[in-house]
Structures are given as C-alpha cells and as structure tokens.
Length: 79
Image (cartoon, rainbow, N blue to C red; front, side, top):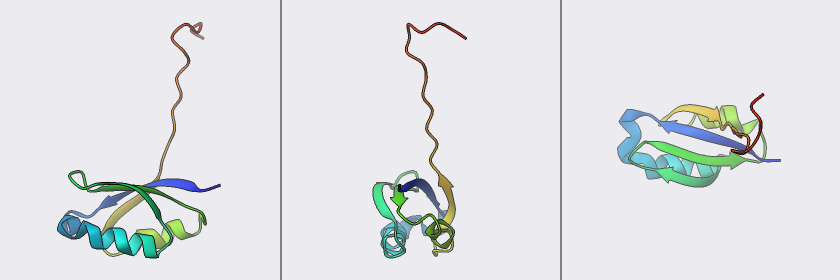
C-alpha cells in the first residue's frame, strides 16, 4: 500500500519548486498536489524505504507522513 507524504520545500528553493518536484518524481514520488504559495508538495511512495531518500533531495526542508483523522457522525453518542 502506498504511503502518503507531505513535503515542505525550503524557503530558498521556492523559486525552483518545479525543479524540486521533478527531482522528487525521479526519486519515486507520485505527486498529487503542488501548493506553490505554501511551498508544500503532497504525494505517495510505493516503497516506504524511499521516504528518507526524498528528504535528501536538494530544496526539501522536511518529509512527513500524512495523517488521517476521522470524526464520528453528528448524531453519534458522545463517548
């Protein structure tokens, strides 16, 4: 199962974000979104061992797993 990750682009690489995206894709990232104004890239990797290597790409500030939060339906009893 692919692991979804969020990547923060370093401030000094924001003007080269397309180059960062290309390098991440070459490193195995399946890019889902590029949020240019925020300097954030979201995507997934099939091989979870590649996550650490993606953090070493020039222009990457951090790589974090995406987290999912699910709330109960509005009519559910409070526990």
